[in-house]
Amino acid sequence: MSEDLRPFGDPGSDAFRVDAYPFYLLNRAVSRYNVVIEAELRSLGIDIPTWRVLMILGEQTPLPIAQVARSAVINLSTMMRIVERMTKAGLVATAPNPDDGRATDLSLTEAGRTMLAAARETTAPLYRKLIRGISARDFSKLLGLLNQLHDNLE
Image (tube, rainbow, N blue to C red):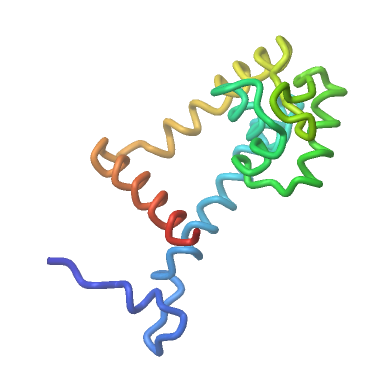
């Protein structure tokens, strides 16, 4: 049986250690990942928020802009600026939502699909490097734990 490290991750505990605080470790990993991935994406002429939008729309298009913003973890006002920039670049198109006149749908264009394919090809080696040495079981467990942390915050 392994030692229970949860008390060391509790900021209210006298035994608190930053190296046992999961949100510090998550932020450290994401921050480092963003530095590395940003350089890769920059070579394609896109940034991380654009990459997030492309990935989301790559799974389902069209989607309401507000839904894309929620999925991409981007506030709506920032999302509107990203959509404007992506529209000017020809990566996405907007259209009124047929079911809700107040909503605007966002779709990938052919150029957007091409950019998504290029971004996937460019970022795949980094992904493969990051998961190297992590078993399928551990990877599945990691995804489950990350989703549980997210759900616990809802």
